[in-house]
Structures are given as C-alpha cells and as structure tokens.
Length: 292
Image (cartoon, one colour):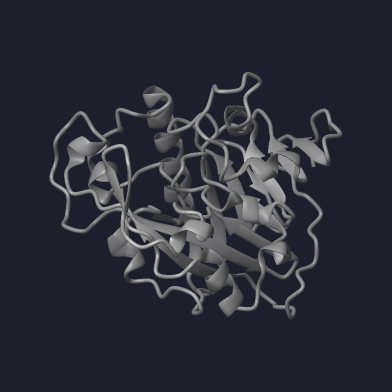
C-alpha cells in the first residue's frame, strides 16, 4: 500500500493508488464470495436530451433516469455505493418533488427498509462511497456516519469547502465530515484503489462530471466483472454518440475519463453499467434478490 501524509481527523487516511484498507468484519453470517444487492430509490424521468445537453438526440422512451444504490457484500465486509435522491425521512411524504426543471419520483420504500429486509442496519455497513457528490447520489449519506467513507480528495473538498456557502446544501451528508474517512489523493483514471485487498472490489477515478467522480468495479463470481459508472454517462444514446452534458465540471476532463475507462473495460471484458439506465435495471432483480 502506498500512503500519502496520514492526517489525524477523527480518523482520516490519505492514501495513494494501489492501496487497500483493513476491512472490518461484517456482522452478518459469513459468506464465501462477493454478492451485490440493488436498491431502487426513485426516478427522474427525462425524455428530452435538451434537459442536459446542448445537442438534441433521440432518447428511448422511459430510458432514464432510475436512481439506484448498490450494496456489495464481501467476505471481509460491506460497501454501499450511492445512497439515493430523497432522504428516507422525506420519502413518506406523498407526491413527486421538483429540483430546478427536474421532476423527482420518490421510491416506494426507503433505503433503510430495503436494508432491513436483508438483515442490515446502516451501522452494519463497513464502507460508504458515492460515485460523485450530486444530490441524486448522496441523499442518505448521514445514515452511514458510522461507516468508513471512501472519497476522492477533490470531491470531499467540494462537499466541505473552506469557505461556507461555496457549495450546495450539505444537509444530506454533513455528518460524514467527522466520520472515519479514506481520502483518495492524486488518483488518475489509470490508478486503482482495492477496497478489500483481493482485487474483487476496486475504485477508479473518473473526474469530469465532478472534480472527484469515481467508478466501481465489482468482480462477481457468476455475473462476471461489472463497472458501476455513476454519471460517467446518463443514457445509452449519450455513450454511443459521445455527447457530453453541458453541466459537467470539466467537459474535456470528462471526455478524457471516458476514453480511459472505455479502454480499460474493453481490455478486461468488463460490463459498464450506466447507473441511470432504466432499461438495464429493469432486467436486474432488485433486493432482496442479489447478484453473484
């Protein structure tokens, strides 16, 4: 493991690439191989590309945008990847929500309800990580304040800036500020962070959508290796046409990250899962079923 300037902050570890942290044993009954649960946490229906892009292109009806969370269960612990668009405490309120020009359809069940159904509470989760800091990926971040947070340094800086008021409302994740944290510093898309130390659950940097966007590779014994790609792309048509949303933090960086990631998965035979791809997730059974 390569470590960069460990800093005491609650317990904050700055790590370089090719690192792994000692995992805390999960409280659940032991398992022998990796499995993954999918939680459905709402929907943001988008049918017109101009909602996000300068270009107009055809989108498949109801192709986007589901909101999901994934729980990866490993023999050495657990990792929850992304935590939804509406905090659980607000899910019980009826009716759709709006954010700017976007309509948000809440989930039928809270994240905590779906976790409880398979025998977990938020306090049981070893690690929490977000693909990036946008509101539709971090809504229940506070629930995992007792987990170890894995985050790219630039996204953490944007989430908790030195100058108050320099970012959006932090209420959905502010309790992570003093959590045990592994800050991934100076990673590039060529670098890996091995969560459990055996190559089955790996985080890679993919900046552009936000300064510290990251993607997750999970090597499932039966399904094979899959990449949970966050908002590297939102639509299949966007990926095929190489369109880049106008709201990216750095559009050229997004293009570079996409190329690096596409080369990486092609060489290794990894499936790329667009996390907002409704058509994809309709083919995948949600929790309490799991993939292995």
